[in-house]
Length: 283
Image (cartoon, rainbow, N blue to C red):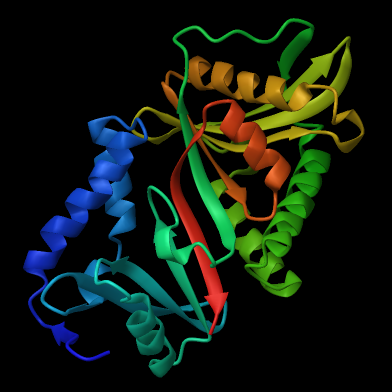
């Protein structure tokens, strides 16, 4: 595209970019400490990004090696029709796939399939467990079977999103579980629950307190397949918010993979805003 040039000095672009990212997090209900903690994650590796301008707006791109493949990243586009330039730049630098992180709507990337969303909700001060349900801690004896089921579900979710192959998803699962549960059942800050109705287990929960300032991360709020369609999904979300306050936090955050339209609809209806959305296409 004529008129677009790469710039060496990123200072003018960076200030505006960071403020736009912060504004998106604030609009989603993040506290200032949380918004700034999320910004730190969003700008990881920023010094290595390539920035270009046409004099009216900006484009920021980069490439990285991920799961054995070269992946392009479009970090910012405010140049009208700048997406084509960004995609071409990624392809010229060896990327077979290009990803974008979005805050506040898909815009010109609406045709990129959704691969992952990060959702958040500020909980009530005293959330209650729904009537008819009880919650108890998962026991250490129950942990191995729980772990195996969680790992299988995680791999399945990644593959369904279209983000990775089964082999790549298994490798990612191994890395993620090792990182987040380095001491297994005894990993600090993690709590595991069994959700019961009439004395019968209908699901489980796994949360990490203090994941970010004031935030409990819900790694899993799972309703057993045979118990779905009975309203327990909405109840599990309430249990997650109850657990958040039990851990001394005020907001709950979690990840959902693309392709899970039923879950996304549930999260919309229970007030969980999209903080970040990740989309990608093959080039």
